[in-house]
Image (cartoon, rainbow, N blue to C red; front, top):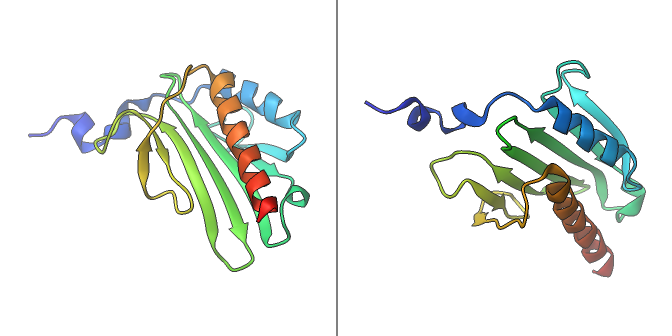
Length: 148
């Protein structure tokens, strides 16, 4: 018989961390790259934070850019960056920390498809440090898009 964690490795991530999601929303709302933020399902019971990024800061071939953030009381998280391109393709990556069966607890889903995994090393798991790491990677991605 398998343990509950083996049946569902995400079972132990815990409830959403509303305070951290609110903190991240405030920081995203003040970032010049972000045009809109919203909670799903709502502000009172946030489980997911959506951020729409400013399309004008990307080449015309990109139609939308978003960041989806989940943060849990266990300090586990998932931060998903997605670009939609005119050619109907996605360019995406994801930073994750949660129990799983495929590798270490902290890992990165590599672009362009977010299917391949790599171990991730962060100097701190404080939400603002993780946020800073992610935003720096997004800025690097933006610069790379314009240098092509």
